[in-house]
Length: 433
Image (cartoon, rainbow, N blue to C red; front, side):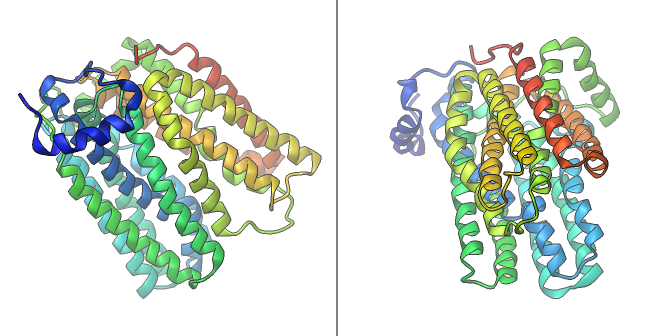
């Protein structure tokens, strides 16, 4: 059967992007999905780039933390942003995976989740314009909680849809390319923040509305995927599905090791605030510089990490862990020596840890997608994300350690965690083989 018309004109661009595959036949998706792979590849890139752009524009660690203070909300609410975003996106998955498994086409669930995230972002932007003080802060927190829950649905479904519509030799390339494109847009936002050409509160509020539009557009793009109906017999009640997913910890030793590696490598995500706290208070690092460092790291490294993940996601996790451990160890050494200057050494170290963080993200997404069979992929994802969500919540203990012993001690612990994670990653299987 010949390829579809859309597939025909997209095929040259697809071949150019995956140029080293030399027309390699699909290895783990059906022939029908292989014929549609070029079109689906670019839909994945488009939808994921839009979603990741929205993530960067509404980043709770930086953007929302700044915004919630600007609208006069109590500073105590800032501490709720990251836990709500991370826990809300990860913890529910063990209970929702069974219900989502009943859907023969999970692209609809991902699109619905993206649309709800867009509506939640609209609520955040509206609150920033029309509300102030505690009312604005609580509204933003509530909208972020809805956004996080919608994101959890997208997270459960995405790897399953990706596994059905893109061959394992191209999945990391798609996610890496999307991350690089998104980083370029966020970098432009950071440049505008830094230049000060637009009043900062107006610019940040506009970015929140742009994030809403990006998520709503991503939902439309994702619905266009050519996804064949999948198995639904795994759909079960929430409790029974959760118990079955937990049983994978006993029956799947490679999944156990992967979750342990991923849990240790959460240090690359948790480290930046402590790196900033470890710097001498010479000057406050501006919002634009922080966003720019994260965006630049993503733009320069994501596509490379993604391409490497298609060859060996195991090695990407090892290399990302090694680079993250080195960045944290260097930050620790510079802080001890008093050389962690906020205006040059610190931004360089934050850039380095964000490069490692991008490698961890892309490596673990590709590894889990390629490691799991189609029947187990949703369960593996839900179990892994739920456990890592608990680990991220437990990461609050680092705040206590920093208050007692100092942020420098936390950096030393995180450097050790990252390096141990890299050593354990050596024992993961080469799932791309």
